Image (cartoon, rainbow, N blue to C red; front, side):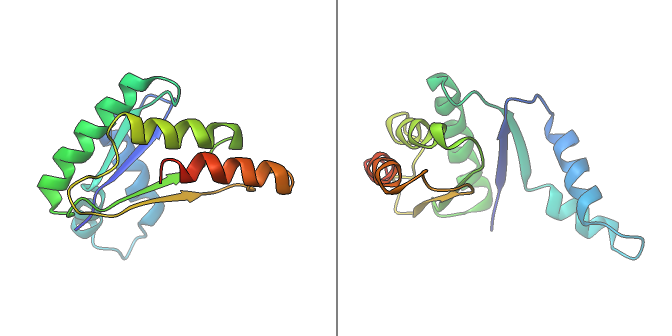
Length: 132
């Protein structure tokens, strides 16, 4: 049971996102129906990391998908952006109610260097642990 919501400033429809997923995983010998079923779990939302209303919308989507796919509130947030936004994202996920509160787990995965040096890494760690 899973669902994946892709977020970016770029505007895409769910169908456009799913087509990209299918294209990236398919080959001539693959079962097209199986690829489409897999891709049906993927959703897209245009998102500005500094706009708190976007987090509220994301929370509603996550709650709906929790119900639809029976994910038990388990949520993984994979963040691939400039490190200066990590703290903002973590804070907004928490303050806008996106983190699961119904017994599931919340995890934050960061895809970038974690700070420039010890001091900046410690500062970033403090920002993130205040939310997670």
